[in-house]
Length: 311
Picture: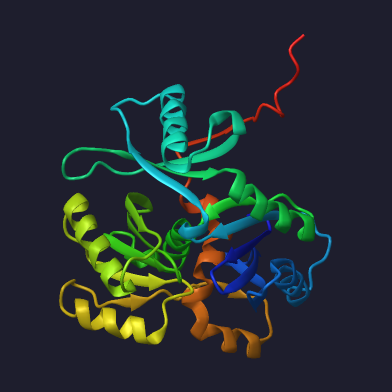
């Protein structure tokens, strides 16, 4: 795999993980975590120092919580072509984000499995003006233009890598941010359903319960519920374990993003970071994403400013 630095920009934290190919799989070579500050640039500069960042040319993935991302879902036709999908994506951008295609955008569209009604959805991750502004600051500091993704997909990739024995299970992966909750259903490395709530209305437990109900409605039975993200604190985990005790064949768990990663860090640092595996999972998954969950369509629509002048 290509060496990849993934930066997870959570609500109150900025997390970084440098992952490259190892002798048995993926190898973790650098790790950093900084509390967000009034000036985000300061936090990124501190993260850069923690990672002992050099000039090695690598891929950079910027992982955002859904509250900071532009995500949308829309039904797909039976045999969607790229022009049709692009047209639908532009309609969602206009309707949901009050933006216009002339502003330019990048889109990655993930195709879900047919739900119990036979409906297939396209889940889009769009890079619009707001996401470009975040990415530009990261590029300015690290010198590489990042590819933007979202924490829910990073968690799905981290789960696929670290829990290969659970591939056949229909797993509900809950990504908890301070202002958002995502739930992605995955099975055999395929995205079956993806829903999100941001901003969270009421408690995070209520948001998870609502998304679980929607997921079961669309997909049917779920085998396991796995939690990750910056908001998956002990108290919330305990509440969700109580809420879902005995509901699924497997008990509610917390994703260990480091489980099968080969560690190139000092043992003391690996041991200290171990309990934070659920928090680092979106970043680790962001580095591994292209190996596990590829979008069905990826395209860039230039802005008017990027269009060549007409002769």
